Image (cartoon, rainbow, N blue to C red; front, side, top):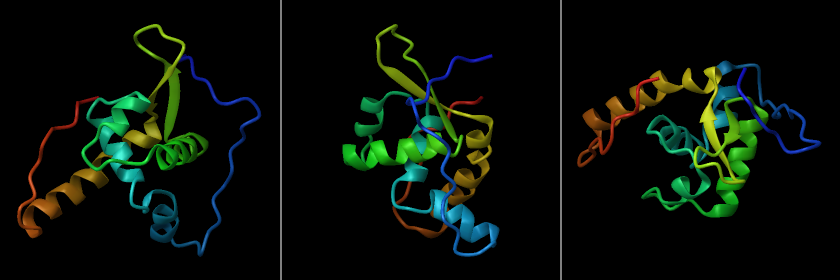
Length: 127
C-alpha cells in the first residue's frame, strides 16, 4: 500500500454538474486551461511543485495549487513523500489519472496533424 497524504480535514468535493453528459462532466474536471498540462507533466515524470512551475507554459503558482488540490480531491493524483527525503511532498498519478494517457495522446496526435508548427518535445515515461 502506498503512503499518501491529504491535507487534514480535506474531503472529497464532487464538482457541480451541468448535465449527466460524460463529456460535459469530464470537461468540468479537466477542461480548463491548465489541468491537462499538469497531467501531461506528471506523465513526463515531473512530480514536484517546482517542476510544474518550470514548464514552458508558465502556470501561476496560485492556479497550480488550486488545480493540484482539485486533482487530489478527485483522486486523479496523490501526494507522496518527496524522493529526496525532504519534508515536502511530490505528486503522482493514480490509476484514474493514468487512464487519461490515451486522451492526452489523442489530443497530441490531433495537434501534430492539424496545427502547424507543433512538435513533441518530450515523450511520456511508460508506467
